[in-house]
Structures are given as structure tokens and as C-alpha cells.
Image 1 (cartoon, rainbow, N blue to C red):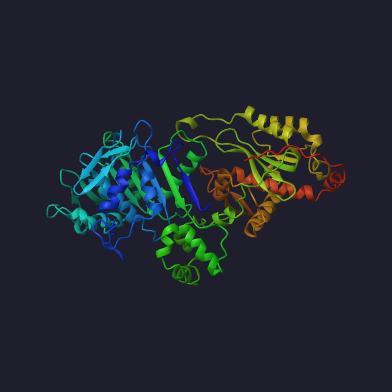
Image 2 (tube, helix red, strand yellow; image 1 turned 90 degrees about the horizontal axis):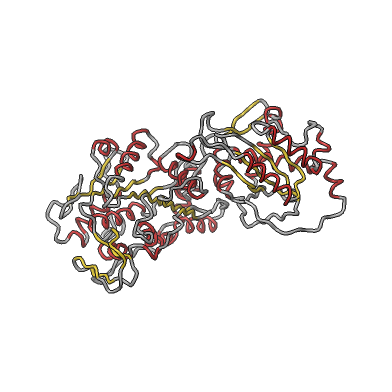
Length: 568
């Protein structure tokens, strides 16, 4: 998963404010650093360093609108590796928010012109037109009192040394704030300052929200985010630029990622968040210089051409003094595992094979874990031939008001189980008895005779029920076996985002039989039920393959292959 994007269903750059991008490219120069002062546009000839296509596209994504002229997003998250000039991107957008045509002003008939200073832009028919904000208030958030923030530094540099500094009154740009001609300001802020101010923001930049893992920083984000709802005519919004987070720290970025996943999975009705994350491929050979270079080019995109990739590899990944997990997070932009995580994001992602289609006549096993309300209810399949894991269905409590009083639709669960038996060749099936006893009894009565494995297990007279409380040893051993299989690259799966989330939520929990899995805490909202199902399905497959009844079953006449159905 080199790039993960969560966008509104109506998203199209055709409806973006292209005039805003053109304005930025005309006026902005690069901020403090090796290329400071070099313009984006060769407006007067000489050296220039244009925006790369990826960053230009991200700016257009920020300013896309629906057909009524309403902006699609009030929150945009851009997650990129360390050194990708994310703060500079945010600074360019901040300049447009302060002085440029950055709000919707109707659809062009064609030929209309926007002019400001020496900038002239002619609109195409049907193009979104732009206008400046009345009294823009831009807040650039930093994590420490002693910092003004990289984004503010880029804005301040442009207003002191770039083309935008021309004709500005003396003292406009300062270390602590910028007073804009005609009213408005740009202000760097920290947690204490943001909480004191009354909230007039038209635009806010949160730099590195993966660091917002302390109560006062989380509260800073919540305070400013609420302030952005106050000025309807200004259409306020927030841009967050960051390197990937450390899972388990409950940072603001981690929470936003959970929100993005909920949107992608259809678990919430809101669509006002845009998420754009880019990371290195999961299965990189860390000892192969060529593979490492290719991985860094993947994660840095066009910007990789100007970086010392070999220097990053040698000083960050091959330096034995450096923590390899930190190097992965900062330079591969991968979310690294919590200290007690059962497995890691790269290890699990390496097994994703969404291209694999499991035919409806291929023998499969299933594992079911049910709940009435709070925990998720899941049904996961596993192909007998190779152990490929796929999600058949999952029922989870929706977020927000829709989740109040929610209970799983048991009739729908029953329908899916029965439909799977009708459409597929299910040869083994276990279901945790908690919460679904009557349904499990009915499934056993209706389908028990066709389950090959149950004839030789000798564990219970019940052909389906699997009481997790009574099989702690078996499940613990299954967890340890799957952990090894994942690390050795022997597990493939359908890449389902819900399964990935549950797998990465699982924490290592030692017991008297070995190391099993559990949630972070008893009251944790992070679910692991699909992880339980995946481990259980792989366990059922191993039991089936070791069963004499399976060998006898395979020796019989082969069924004619049926139609192919893609699940998950």
C-alpha cells in the first residue's frame, strides 16, 4: 500500500480553484534552507524550482468543490516522510489563504479575469472562480512555546524576501505575527495561546500532529478545530502535515487516521476529511541497496530526485546506533508497531493479495466470532489449498450518534452464514459460542453433516461450537503459529482494511501456555475480533489438513468447478 487516499465520492480536480494554484506558483518562493529564495515560477527569468506534480495536485485536492460551490473538505491530512518539505507546502497554502483568491466565487462563463498586482488569470468556461477572504486569520500551530513553527517561518520568509513583500508596509511581517494589509493576520500559536484566543480562524495549519500525544496538545487541536466552525462565510478549514505516527500513543494523527478508515469503510456518514498518505512498500529487503533506493523513491515521489538517498540509507537504516523501527517511521513513513503489538504494519501489509480470487467450489474453512453490541462480529474464511485468508463479512458498531443503542443484526449474520454455506464448499467451521448460542446450534443442525473435520476431532459432540474459554491452549498455540507465519511471509490475505485494523490493534498477552492476543485494555474501543477470526480460520485449516477424514474426503470423486465469486 504505497499510497492511501480517502477522498469524497464526488472528488474531482476539475472543480478545484486552479486560480489558487496558479497564484501560489506566480508569487511564492522556497523558504529557509538550501533553496531559499528560489521562485516557483520563472516570472522574471533566471533560476526557478517549480512545484512538483504531486504537491501541485495536493493543492488542487484541498480546493475542490461540489456542484453547488461548497468546498468538499474542512480537514485535509497530508502524511509524508521526513524531509519531504511538507511545512513548505503548508506555507504556500497559508500565503494563498492570507492574500490570494482562495474562496469560491461562482462558475465562470469563460473569459472572466482575476487580476492582482502583476498576476492575471483568465478563466475557462465552467471553471471555479476565486476571491480573497475578508479578514483572513491564519493560525500556524507549533508544539512548544519556544517555536514559531516551520510553516510560519516559510510564510514569514516569503513576506519579507519574496515577491509578496513588495509594497507591504514596514513591519508587516514579524517573528510573532503578520498584520495583513486590509485587515487580518497570520499568527504562530502554541497550546496555551490557542486556548486563550476567541477563535476567528479562517485557516489553521497543524504541523506534525503525530507529536500531539500529550493532553494539552490534543486539547489544542480540539479547541482550534471547533473554532473553525464559527465563520460560515469564510469557509474555514484545516491542513495537517505530518510524518506517520507511533501506534498506541493516541496522537491526534492516529485519531484522524482512525476517522479516515471509518469513512473508507462506510462506518460514518461524514465525508469532510481528506486523507493522503504515502509510504514505502511493505516487503523491502533492508540489506539490498537497490531495493532500498527504490523504496525511498516510492515514498518520496518526485522529491526523491533531489535527495541523497544513499546517505539516508547508510546513516538511518544501516547505522547500528539507530532504531530501525524509528527509521521506518520517519523515512519509510510507515506506522511502526507499539511495544506490545502482536505484529507490525509492514509484516502484515506484505501479505496483502487483493488480486487473489477464491472460487466458490474451492474448499474453505471458516471461523466466527460474535457479539451483541460493543465488540465486532466477524466471519473470516481461509482457503484450504494455500491458507489464503479473506473477510466474508463484519458487523461493527457505527461511530457517532448512529452507534447509540446499536446492536448487531443477528438475522443478517444468520443470512450471511447460510448464504456462504449455500454458495461455497465449506469443509470446516468453528464459531465461538458466546452471544450466539441459539444460532450456532441451528447452524450445527443444518450444516454439521457436511463438515469434514468434525468427524475425527473428538473434542465435542457439537460440530460447530468452539468455546474460546475452554480452548485457551489451542488458541494460544494458533496465535504463536500465525505470528511465525506472518513474519516468514507465509500468510496471504485479501488486504481488507477492517482486518488490517483489527490485526494491528492486537496486543501480545502471555499466559501459562505461551503468548496469545488481546485488546489494549478491557475498555479499549479498538477491536480485534477479525484478528481472532483469522487466527481461528488458519487454526481450523491446520486441524483439517491433519485429519484422516480430510485425506479420505480428497480421495473421493472431484466436484466439477463452479462459478468464481470474489469475497472480501
